[in-house]
Amino acid sequence: MSRTHLRIYNGPSEDTPTVRLMETQELPHRVRVPLNEILPLLVDAVQSKRTWLRDFADDEVTISTDLYEVILAYQHYRRPSA
Image 1 (cartoon, one colour):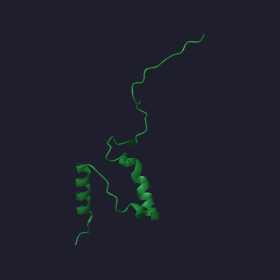
Image 2 (image 1 turned 135 degrees about the vertical axis):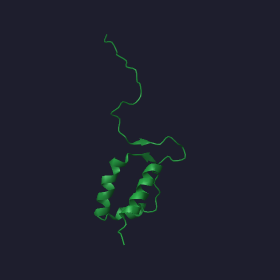
Image 3 (image 1 turned 90 degrees about the horizontal axis):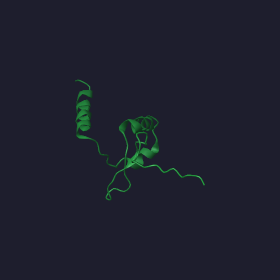
Image 4 (image 1 turned 180 degrees about the vertical axis):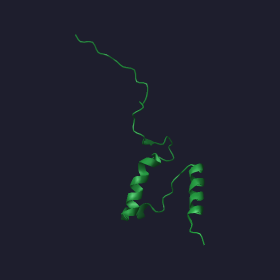
């Protein structure tokens, strides 16, 4: 008779994928993804003029306040000088 070895599960490990479902019942079809994971793909899609981007043009995204402030500052200083 062989012995069965049991292991204790302590939750997800460090190498668990970074994409994870948000834990709210209000937003069941949302995922959290690091910006550096999707930004290169979005840049490529914009540069390649992918038509599927129009399907999501009116979708809202949630970003942190500090990222929003940096984007506003970048937009302000990016303008060509008169």
